[in-house]
Amino acid sequence: MYLRKIGCSMQHKLINTIVVAIMLFGMGQELQGQTWGKESLTRGKVWMTIANSYRLGEVDLPWPFYTIDYPGHSTGSDLADKTSYIQAGGYAIYGKREGVAAAYSILGVFYASSLYTYATADATLIKNYNMANPALLAEEIVTGGHHVIALDVDIDHKSMVWSYPKYDDFVIHEFTITNTGAILFEYRKGIQTEP
Image (cartoon, rainbow, N blue to C red; front, side, top):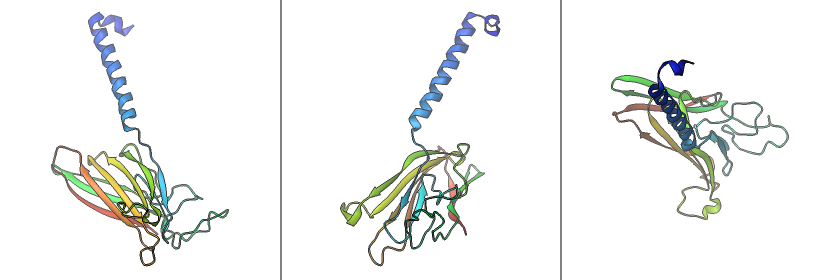
């Protein structure tokens, strides 16, 4: 009824605008295509579950996943049989654009929120046992990525473990922070854990 009052040409413009907006919204969802996920590193003595949001551990209890378990082992039927050294883990980042501060953090006790971030790369576990491919730097590698909306940066991460003696009791985490905004960005970052 309202559309009849605004006239035929205005009606077509309004309908075209609505159709274009719906198409753009649908394309954006398809283009993203990535979902929140997690993978576990279990090759060395330290077992750890890492999400593509770089959340360490799991939110829901009891879980068959790992936070920082040392020495890591399969839980079998008793999911509480683990030596987790943290309840939750993640990271924090703070930055300024044109003097306006913004911050983002994630801990293992919360899922990533679409209000603040979205996945840009699925969580992927790469198995390279006994260094079958010497071009890869580790025996197990978890990769993933996400975009932090308020800071307009992409965070890509890679976590690596080995099973060789003297190299089997640590995890190396590598981050790549990409400024996707047009304005210069100054930042600070840190790793967070909760005992």
